[in-house]
Length: 559
Image (cartoon, rainbow, N blue to C red; front, top):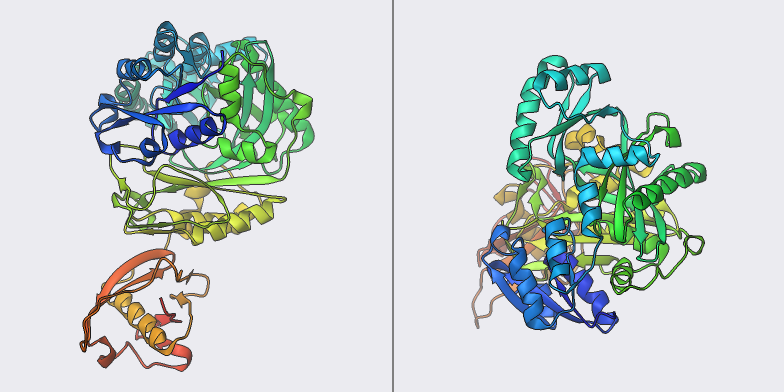
């Protein structure tokens, strides 16, 4: 059956991503939206949109009955779940099928088979796929769990059986910590997943997070599209992903990808899926030191890096497979071309402990020479109801070094105001010498600590002084750049988005609103009408540079 009309049961950048491919294929699209998303980008891009409830996800995007009803009401023939929300909910997948609609995803039985970590690992062992050493037993008494942990050897991970996204997971380094960690893990697991059962795994000291993109069809074909490295994580949340994995040799790649295909075949998998592995990289990547962790039975957030190195549109493959077509390419027709890296731009403030930053995106200017996956635009509202990701910034180059350099520049040049973002943090991570050399692990960000964080916020006086220096140069007609503290913390003034807004009144001085970028963070300040008659901090020196008592320097430019 050819899909002619598709409902996307999601929001934000993944909804926009699916709409883009569907439109190219000539497929009519239907969006769903909550109160908070009434004017969202995915709503405006779709051919039709249906309101499904209040802003909290549990009252809208997680209400499967309303989504199915919206599909039937609008004549949609298929439902694409995106990722998150109901994408790995087997009951929802079955409800879609029972309603006579096509489900763009794996069979419900496959979702169930891989949904619980303990059952999935048992199935992988039966399929000959190596799993992380640990305890998967039915006896969940604290005494048995602690005994198993001691037998495995400290440190261990206590993980929720039904967990995901870093929730319901605790590292335990010694026996005296175990009971408290177990109780905490169980409380979080019960709250997040309605299931407080746990498993115990050996904690890998130098772990790398390697995952393999797999794809199956209804004709019995299964292929892999090579690996991704998702080791750069903060509190178990992925931050930067790349493909292929640094340091992966051909023999190890062949072994891990073959294991991934066996894993997919073990559950009769159809559609896009990801087999996640944990690697002990203390002695480099070796096939005998890489173990199965879990399977994500959906498209992944980081799928663009795989698309970039293979030239494959994974969403198109999903739609074709759901329509009953065979996979477009055989395994021998797939190859790696170059290197791709993706950074997740979040609405959060690294300088304040990564606290969420909400509000209206008055300015959202991205680097033009990249692939940008986003569900927002200027004027959009960043709310506290959903994931705070603003965009995914993706680059593809011939080498990893070139990809790192280009993505670092793109993160540095991304302007968002007044919402704070993690762009300065991303730039520092990408520019770090160890990252550039491929010396990475899941503990990379934690180990680097404050070295990846932007400096303390400048005071209001400092911002005003920067604005004054900018206006001095504007009146002298000299183009510039603005820098603070040390040579490696350069802040670039982007002329087009940062034009000073000048009011107009005949024969009168006016206040000036000036936007300046300080260490890749944007600030807006207003200078009084007599600003030219006031002393600019310190003594002006050649070329418009002014230095204050604290050593703050401005190499100013007209904005």
